[in-house]
Amino acid sequence: MEVNQIELTDKLKKLIRYYEEVISLPHKREIAAELRDEDDLFLLLLYSEMIGIPNPVYYYTLELYPYMIEKFHDWHLRMGMEKSPLTGIRCC
Image 1 (cartoon, rainbow, N blue to C red):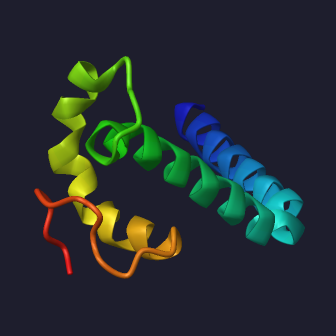
Image 2 (image 1 turned 180 degrees about the vertical axis):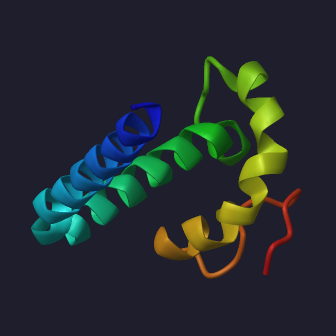
């Protein structure tokens, strides 16, 4: 009986994944654009102190720099900056 329960659980999980995929299919482009916009806003907040915009949580965001540096190049290109606006970060 335990094996049947596991198989039923697996089938139910597959059905739920399929359902979520069918529901989100027409909106994939919009979802991707929203996620990109959220990432852009987060990166702006993260690097705002370096470009002259006051950031009250600057001290806490310092820990995130090593993880976000890889995304920085794509971000500044999307924002219309040909080269990195930050002198401390060379990505181009």
